Length: 473
Length: 80
Image 1 (cartoon, rainbow over the protein chains, first blue to last red):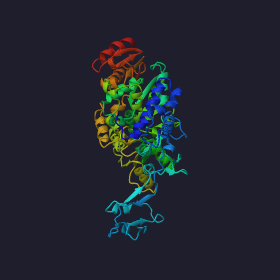
Image 2: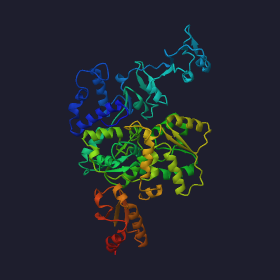
Image 3: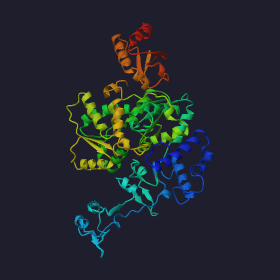
Image 4: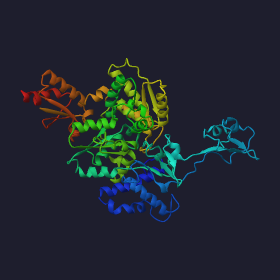
């Protein structure tokens, strides 16, 4: 088994792999109904109450793996998979010993804590504001927060509970970051996949003779599939039928150069690399939308360059991001990028073709500079803008970057900017914690991923943004 | 005349940037800017032969060391 963080990811991967296998063989339509049984054979349930429910849920996963579902949102709730988790908020458990200290009572500013005849604490929900202070001070950890993991993950509060007690996504608010997808322990929220479009695109290219299919790989690749060498992953991508592989990090270099000039010209900017952040600004802080950099994302910038300089090209983005799947549907990006898939889906594609990366030769991937590559982690974009200012002798402009690691920090910075109380002239907005290496479409997330991306950055042939970009004209 | 240099990963590692830079310098030195269109592409499918350069479609294998000779023979001589 390949390394995933959770068994939910592994289950989703199995569905994607089966769908992909049939798609390559042109047998998807006649076999689509049989995929759930192929994944859950026999009569003994391993995940739910019975195999029939397991298969029914898998049926829904198959729909999403084929790009379907019940709305246009990339992120969708599979109603029947939702376990209707308790959502009562802070609650006193039986661990309460009825102590004398009553720290919980003293710390509660709302007077929501009272005690029964056994001296055990109770929370008055009409007074409680869910601040969590009581839970923090209890020496027995007797107060817990019973919050749904999906709602906890969604820091912009786009998830509520519907009349059937299942999770419900507000599609207007949702920024497609995928935090809920990764956090739901039942796999009841998932992202739509476009792998069958990619397979179709590769097949119709007839070995890249009808048109050439380019894979644009996000720099977070430096932290992924570390059970093999990066060069083997690149060979694997070519074995799937892609004509060539280009680093999106080169788009990062291009953006750093133009964005730094734009910053000097305008005096204040927010970044535009992260599609979830951009959508968040536009929907939650529309008054700040004019400050979003006019650069397209590194993916779209590079794809545009390639499509304007090469004929008959189709472009597939491969990255850690579920929001990219929505970005490529925007009218401004659609002409340049034909599909977006995740690293999770890439692994499923490899295995659907029985491509064993460990046996492959290493190919080269080297188009960008260190700075383009570190876009994948929080702070990298700000570092790149600082470098680009220096390289272009624009360093009399004093960069004051506010590096926002995760959508909660983005929200705080945007609120301060709205009140004119932000001491910064550049907001680096990344919706995922740690940046793209924290994206929901990664196979694994871990402490070492930042160091892995920095290492990948240092391995780049080009040391400056200017050198990396000098090849393009 | 159209000269295309491969700037894909494999050729990049083998020195396509110095090849491009030298070609730009040679074109300028010889005042051929209006007769030569210099461009790049991300892959020519001949990664073993890099740095791949095409002159009006004909493929040549060039290195940063051989670029001057290549320019004299395949570019300058043909334009003379």
